Length: 422
Image (cartoon, rainbow, N blue to C red; front, top):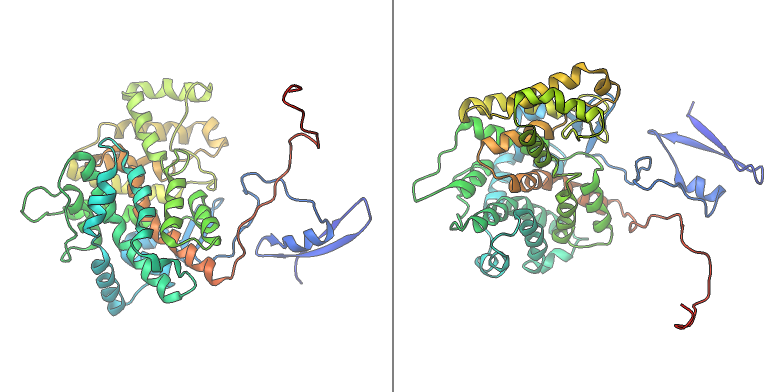
């Protein structure tokens, strides 16, 4: 028998029975019984705004799956481009499909020479790389005006390939511009992640050799960040996309949301916190300060996860492999001590403050040579397939333009006074 709930309007005595479907109730049935009465849910934390087949997340159980596949299996056995294909095309590619997909991405990776000259060179020398990236993504809309034909599935497919392919190129170019270094063009002989690292760090004419452990760590971090259900930036992509904006300004808007320190900037905040703690011996005093409300513990807890973030376990193991190559990051001991204290202290256990994916990822990025300002840029590269998958899915659903309601709390009706009466 189907599960239902019954809602009664006590003002009129009218009742309506609404079925429960996949943990949701139909808002239309509510609206029909109670016209003009809205849920007051400012952060949409109790509101389902989308039907999606892309990512399943169970925060209580600590589960994350892309199209049904557990994140632990994907991170351990697939490349980022395989996962990107899974997200935007619906299935993991077989051998020939992967070869064709890699070829499509490689061919679309270069950016127009005028893009370097007219767009990137227009920013201040000290411009934050994320600000440059957000603006540059939007600017790409002017290079491919056909992208506005969003109702054509083939056109959407073309733009999805372009954005996934060009994101590392623009990101690396933004970094090198800020460092006063010459741009490095994509190398068709390199895979996606090696290509990005080469465009970031190559010097001189000699081929850039990537340590396989660092390559795998970078690729795996892209996989872990590829999608995360209806988070702030993904919701932004769906809202902007619902206005039928082209994919470039849609992804730029999503990246703008990611730019905020409450979202993509969290791993940067973790690194700054560890640096401020300074020494292993200061951890206990710092944690006492957290409990007293005098300090903020960054990288612990999550809006959705009420258990250990499954991505955090993978990143922690990866961090040790990276440090075997780069040398131990002096902040690692502080991080491990923070985790040890938090997982043993009832104060943090009761509040379900477990390490999240941001807690160790910043240490890996720093040890690989990325400046702090690039951390959110790296997140953007990884998350791009997820944003595009949601954008494309939304357009196939004939969704309406996003238009939430509000609870008005301003003045009641009043007359405009003359300027002398004000």
